[in-house]
Amino acid sequence: MKKLAFNPYLPEWEHIPDGEPRVFGDRVYIYGSHDEDGGDEFCLLDYVCWSAPVDDLGNWRYEGVIYRKEQEPLQKDASIPGIPDRVAAGLPHLLFAPDVVQGKDSRYYLYYSMDFSNVISVAVADRPKGPFSFLDHVKRADGTLPPDIRWFDPAVLCDECGVYLYMGSAPAVHFPEMGDAPLPGGMGVRLADDMHTLTGEPFLCANGIETCKGTSYETHPFFEASSIRHYGEWYYHIYSSLQEHELCYGMSRSPEGPFAYRGVLVSNADLGRAGCEEPQNHIGNNHGSIAKIGEKYYIFWHRHTHGGQFSRQGCADELKMREDGTFEQAEITSCGLNQGPLPAKNTYRATIACCLVGPDATQKLPLKPLPDGESTLPYHTGMKDEQATDGYGTWIENLLPGAVFGYKYLDFSPHCTQLTMRLRGKGILTMRLDHPAGEEVARISVDSEAWTDCKANFTPVSGVHALYFTVESGVRIACECFCFS
Image 1 (spheres, rainbow, N blue to C red):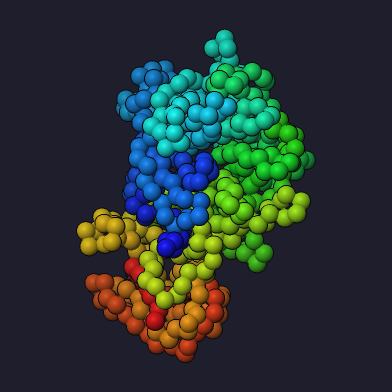
Image 2: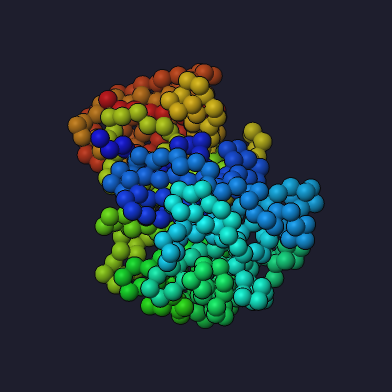
C-alpha cells in the first residue's frame, strides 16, 4: 500500500534545502544542502541523500551520508576565501547547494561549492546514492579560471548536446570582503566529457540586477540558485530571483541560450498566483528545481522553520505544463507529492500547514529566531521526543490573535462531523473552509499549559476543501496535530 505524501516530504527532523531532484532508474533521488535542526548557520552538515520509488512518492528512504566536508582537499588551504568568521576561527568551509548528474561514462558526478570559496569541485560515484569520492576542481586545462564569475551554486547538464555547467550569484548588495563584485547574472560554460575541464568561454544565461534593464528579466532579475533541465525541445534555466522567495525560469532551444524569462515556478509565500497579493506563508530564500516523475512535473522548493531561516525543509508541488512548454505557477499545498487530496479522516501534524501567517502583513523571517515575545510570526518547530512516532515531535508555535494556518487539500468524503485538535495555551480558534475569511464551520477553545485534546462538533462536511484555522483570541497558543471523525 502506498504511503500518504505531504509537505514537507521528508521526516521533519531532516533539513535538506536547495533540493535537486533527479530520477535515476525507478527512483527519484534528492540532493541538497544539509541544515542542522535549530542551527545557527546555513548548510552546517555533510551531504546526505534520500530516495523514493517513482510510483510511491510518500515512501522516502535514507541513503546515508554521501560526501563529507573533510573530503575536500582545499579545506586545508588557508588562502581560500569563505565566510570571514569561519575562516578567522579556523572552522571548515561549509558545503553549499550541490547538483548530481549522470555522466556519459554512466558514473554519477556531484558538483558543489565550499561556501564562498569561488571554487566548484567535482566528486564521483558508481551509484546515485554514493558514496562519492573527490575527483577534481572545475578549471581550464591550464589550471586557470575565467575571471569575473562567481563560481557558486553549480548546476550541470549532460545530454546529446554536451556537458554544461551553470552557476553564479548577482546580489543587489555586494560584500567586497567575500570577493563580491557587481556581475552580469547567471552564467554557463561548456565542459569536456571528463566532467571538470572547461572547454568554452562563459556565456550569460540570466540577467542580474546590473544587466536586466530592458530585458525580459527586468522585473525578476537573477540572484542565485541556478538549475538546468531539458524537456522536449526546450532547455529550462531555473533560478532564484532577487525577490528571494520565488523560483523563476528562462527557456531556450539551446543549452547556450539565449534564454528568455518565462515566469515564476513557485513562491514559498505563494505570492504571484491569481488572487494571491499578500503572503500566504513565510518569505525567505528559495532554491530548488523541476523533476518529471512519470507523466507529471513537480517543483521542489524549501520552507523555513524554528522562527528563522537556518533550518530549511524540502517541499514539492505539482507543475502544470502548457502546450507551448511554459509552466503555470505552482500552488503550494500540504498534499504535495500525494497526487491528490489527503483523506480528512486521519491524524495530521499541524506542521504540514501550507499557509502560516501572523496577525500583521510582515511575513519575512529573520535569519536568526527572535527571543520569545518579540516576534508576531507563528512558526513550525520541533524537538526530539521519545514518545513521538519517529522520535521527533513537531508543532506550530506563537499563534497570536489574528494568525491563520491552513491546509490544501483535504477530502471530507465520507462526511465528517467532529474536529479534534491537540492544543496548549489559552484562547479560541475558528475553523473555516476554502478561504481564510470563509464561513465559520466550528469553534474550538483551549485553556491549558499542557498539550490537551480539544473537540468541537459541526454540521456534516463532505467533498474536497482547503482548511483554515484562525486564532480569534488568546495568548501564545500552540497546535501539535488535528484529526476529523
